[in-house]
Length: 310
Length: 310
Image (tube, rainbow over all chains, first blue to last red; front, side, top):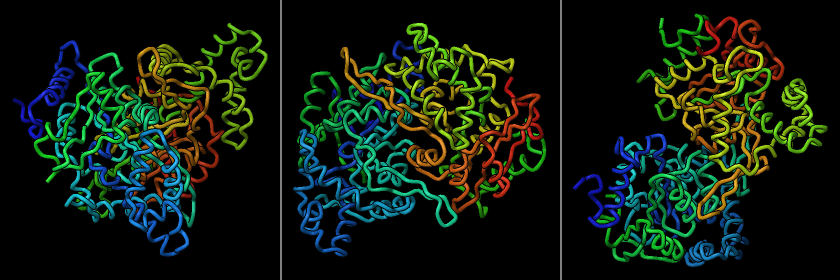
């Protein structure tokens, strides 16, 4: 037995991954894929790191929003400022869950408020703030720092793919510029291979220097079919491996597995309420499609020997 | 004397490049830049390959437009179809030159017509067509195939940077999806590191398969400040080296050289009408700024021992 995926229990899912990698890397084999076409895409929130009780980036936004309310208390009566200052994480979490269920009303209210939070930041300033938050904050329900909520078996999988000539990309509904400062360290993925949700940027030459700023306009919410469009835009190839955990990952898992050669889709199923936070909300269609299409499903409870990195 | 840039004549420009690379790679030196921050961006048309008498992609579009006029002869009375079927390359070339001079009127007429040419193509189909054209076509005034109009000293520079731990990106006004099929072979640059002008893409699940299509909507004309926005969007870092040849490259050359550490901008000056096609139209401001800011200028006539690849 290969030790490459030592954090995965033996079983159908581990075998599906090991066999797929062996299949596409066997020179002269019928399913051989040259290294330049070994493209793998990974969702981030809920796939590579924990997204409960709310995505890590939400905490970053809450911190700025609390500052805004302090400066202008009247904001505290309106959503999403109200939910943030009241610590009403249920409203915020539900907004995202409702989105996956097809109801975007609360998400739009949330987005409009949140987009204002970092507008006007120069990109380097935003990156420094994101990195400070990521390194200094903790998950509110798990007894761990946020950067300690990376799923260890998934990180091992990233490494296994890289060792076998794959190029890994993140294709996430989370903010591209929020993740970038830590993806190389956490996942071995440099900033140019991070695809995510974006606000529009603006370039201005000011004070004798070319500067780039975040605006308050949402450019692209990287979820669902938008993930596939971004994959072509940013990568320029149909991936042969895609991993996700929610309905919003379905189109990219479909796109990756609809190519002409060998391919694999992997769905993370959060079914372990002891070591992880268990949930299926927002993943119902993905679980159903994974079964219907024979995709690999990683059960946190049954397939992972260890959940989080040390 | 280092042989790394053997196709460059000794002189101020070659020295500026060699010294810059030595400076940022000298471990322990004051200007050392770690490999992950050694980001270099290159314009393509007129910088890495010849763009005269018109950009190579124009020929690709003309071929399809001729087919359209054959199917519907009434189109032949309107621009840009008229210019294409009359072989009026001056009108087409002038449209681009006028754009660099600040007058977009003809470029817009041209763009509207040209955008319709490949709308509805599936992305893989478009890529195959672009590759066929690139491999099978010739430059109309130089006695060479189009893929033979790559500037040999620039290709050598790409290699020199890569050998010194740089990561090279193309940031071009040309079509991203048009260049991608050949950039790895020509420049060692994979598709995910090709940034360029784009039409909007659309993802649809049809005939039991996830498919991506080109639409007739211009998404982004990658020129001027848009190049800088795309650099942050796609790369997520301020480059330390930028090479271009026209006014449209100025903002990215400015952005690259306005960082805190060592940096270099290189402007290709097409001043050799014997071995290359000489022109300064569309590069006036760039030449002026290069002088004012002390950027390196590569004179085709004086700095390059050989112009095109063999």
